[in-house]
Length: 152
Image (cartoon, rainbow, N blue to C red; front, top):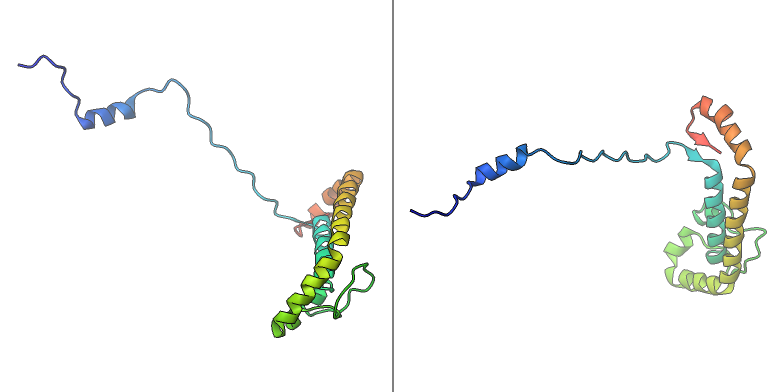
């Protein structure tokens, strides 16, 4: 007979692993942070300001005008435009000339767009820090009791 130790059967190994006591406690599950259920009006205004900067610089139009709901001009922006403002309808109907116009507008306005984007970011950051207490007061005492899912 062979004096070598007996090899454990696979089922014994599996059972041993299941019933072994662990030295360390199991890790707790991490609670995931849920996204806010409210929409911030200040963040919405900041996003619209960025969209206005980009659309007026590239398309020569406001975001609403780009969709075709407003007039085809931006009004009082410092951006130079070629062939007036573009809309989605003009881009779809004449894509070649529209993309040439967009390229010309971008090369003429990219520096002004960059300066405006930096200014928008700094302005909103400064305003949020400066008005933090009044904003939280309005959110807590006016918006939250209404329960409309909007905050400042």
